[in-house]
Length: 337
Image 1: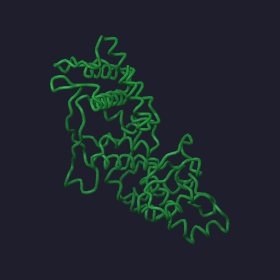
Image 2 (image 1 turned 30 degrees about the vertical axis):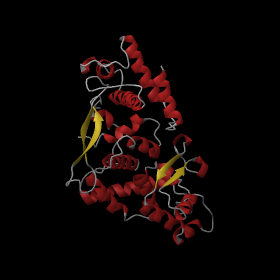
Image 3 (image 1 turned 90 degrees about the horizontal axis):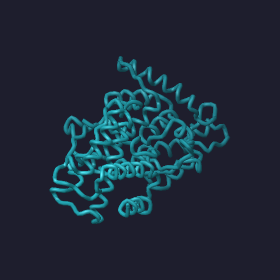
Image 4 (image 1 turned 120 degrees about the vertical axis):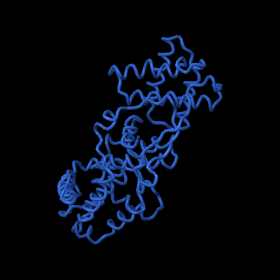
């Protein structure tokens, strides 16, 4: 079908999409459904429940999700792909719509504000469609455990008492979304690169020694305050003394002069966890990997808040190194009211 082929071509050649697996699966499922039910992709009866998009959502996606044949998160992802396809078709004038016959209606959705001073503005509004599929909270946050707003302050207070290597490592996770091993192998060369440029992003991957998952390259953001810390540590007397006249391509150096290791991090994080629990008299049930989830959760919220509704997830996918939108959308779950 020509519009579908043109849409895929647009994604590949204009948007430079690297992973179209979920897009192709969603559209294939949608058009198979249309064929099985003798429906046209561009014909929209006045009654909403008879329109192909609503029938696909209700009769296929939701029905199969409730039967356990697919995850609700998968149903939600597929529906978003279908909506994006129609938005593009309308924009390109492949589809003429009117108020009594259109693929969906836009509506405003209330999102919980998780940023500082949120008591002054507890919610903000984003644009969505009436085809969205709500994902049960249990499914969306099953494996995610970001720090709550109440946990961030005691965490930061406890972290400030540790050595600078551990502080930098943890900030690379919570401010830039790096994995444990990625932060351990953050290279010295990127600190020098940051010193002499005004970049807000750096590229990490095997090409500069960063042990990324599956060896994938990606860009990560570096805040101005973290940049200053990285450059300052790279030039510090402390780092030179730890190296004992040796060289290391990695930024972080342990007391013995060896590169900072996951074992160093885990030992320090256990002490940090104990310090937080003593301070708060409550359980701090987190691992260092939860800092990456914390970064994505709050950063995604901030992008949505400033109006990057269509580009927020795409941007977070790039920074986090996710290959699927469904993975990134899971991080929105603590934010949606």
